Length: 327
Image (tube, rainbow, N blue to C red):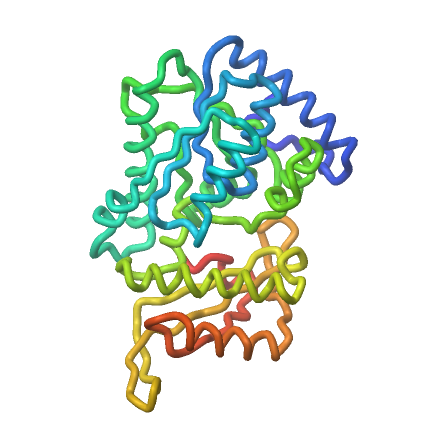
C-alpha cells in the first residue's frame, strides 16, 4: 500500500520482521503501480535514494534506470563511489552526468539560501529532463522522499523538490516507496534489503549538497576548502570509531574571513565550523559530545592542511533552536 499520509496506526519499523513486511507491501504496490513500464530514479548515493533503488531493483529489475548527476556539490570521492557501488557492484542501469561547471556557473553571486536551493533544484531538473528525453518508455519518476521532508516542506522550514517542476513533455507519475518512513526506519529497511552497512549507515546528505554548507555566494576556492575540511573530519571520526556512533557530522565554511597567523605572517582567511549531532528522526537533534583531543586534532589538521582556513569553531546548538544544516 502507498500512503498519502503517515497513518496514525502505522507500526514503527524497528525490527527486521517489520522491515520485511514493509518491503513486501511496497514491492507489490510498485509492481501494481508500474506494471511493465520504465522508471527513472535520481540516485544521489545517499541512504534514501539507495534504499529506494534497492527496493525498486527487487520489484522491477532492469525496468529501472538510475541517473547520478554530479552537480559539483558532492563530498570528496562521492561521485567515484556512486559509480563503483551502483554501476559495478550492484549492476544497476546507471547514467553518470558531470554537470559541475553548469551548476556552479548558475550559482555564481547567489547568497539567499532559498534561492540557492531553487537554482540547484531547478538546474537538477533541467539536467535530469535532458537525460530522460534520451530514454524511451519512461512513465514514472522514483524519489527518495521521506516523512521529515514532507513535514518540513509543509511547515515552510525548507523547500522540497519533486516532479512538479518537470517540463510539460515529461510529466511522470511519482513512485515514492519510503515517503512515510523516518530516517531510522529507512535504514532498517535498507538492512533488510541486504545493502552493505557502508551504504545503509551512510551520513545523511542534503539534496543541495555542500551548497547548504557553504553559506553566502559559492566560490570554487571556498567550496574546495569545505570539501577538504569535511574529508578530514570524516577521516578523524572514523579513526576514533565515531563514524557509526554519531548520527551526522560535517563542516561548514561561512562567507566571512577572520585574521590569523600562518608562517609568521598575517592571514585573512575563512573559519571552519564543525557540526556533529545525534537524533532519532531528524525532527529534533542534540549536539554530540566530542573528546577535546579530537577537537584539537581536527583544528590542527584543518588549519594546516586546508588552504584558506585559519580557524576552527564547534557548533553545539541543538535542534531547535538551530536546524541541523545551516541553510
